[in-house]
Image (cartoon, rainbow, N blue to C red; front, top):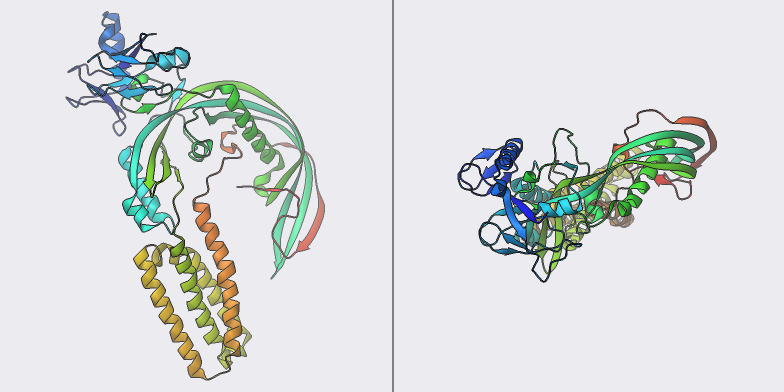
Length: 493
């Protein structure tokens, strides 16, 4: 196979590109829209009429010094204008820089492997940019100049190669699971069970990206991709978009897939979804590969350049699920914590100096409830609305400072011993400065957390329940913490 293909309009012979919203090919000149199946029939008819050059886009330039048949590092001569194209080793599409034709290097796929499946794009560039803007507004403490001044580069609709695995996992596991119940103000009851179960479980279409250009942490966080068996692969889907061939073989990807299937089997046999924590004591699994398919999945991707740093924003081109790491404005974070502490500390200290409150247990409970509610506002409301922008942070901090000063004046007006004021101010410092700061910090960090998916539960096709051979209570303990007492246990996420 020494040539590539080009989607040509049957009406005016101009360039045709895949229109994501229309789900069909659209001519760049006469604006004709032709479905993939209709275009495929036209090409077949042309070939039957010995018009094979109708869809020819470019020929391999075997005389080029960079020609490398094995590594796919080929150069091409455009069939329309004679210009040279050098797409690189893994790129399977390109736009001719001279005539603008959208070339699909079908020879690369046919030399390597033609995909079995494709998941077409349903989200276009407008959806992608809109999703990015919404995420910027959703994230807490993103610097203002990042939102307004960052440069968006290399916005591309990628068809990324994936291997899809059908596996059967059969075996037995010995496990421990833990249930935790709150039984008092600061007391938790931990009940640990140990069991033995076995089963045979089928997994279908476990995805693993086959491109070194895409981080596994990103591709796995964009799951799931919904595969429609009625959509047949066709090279016309790639016209005008950016497609890649695989450079990680199926054997290498199998290692990661087996790990995910093994983790899902652990969860299934231990019935982890119905318990707080779980741990596998011993397992004996046999993993049998049934089928390996080759698919192209749609991913939007772009680089965000800000202060000589590069941030990546990626989105599932079918479902709109996105993943990104954004910078954090720690001055905004500090302003939120400091201003909130000052306001709440002064308020609680003032209320605590009033005799009717100090001498009333219900009154002190009410103060504690106010402090708790205020803490929730600091974590979930203030960062999103009052400290979301630099100007907001300045105004909010100033108003909170004035509010704190007002409560200090009220405290002095009561002319009561400031001993209570000092104690409660320090207590509030501990409450906000440690507990709330820790919780808010966790929320902010979790927004930027991108991890590999440890399992593939959604790919489990078996609906049968495991065979439970034994399941009994081995320990019940009360502690003052809801953390697991099983060493090295896992929590279902």
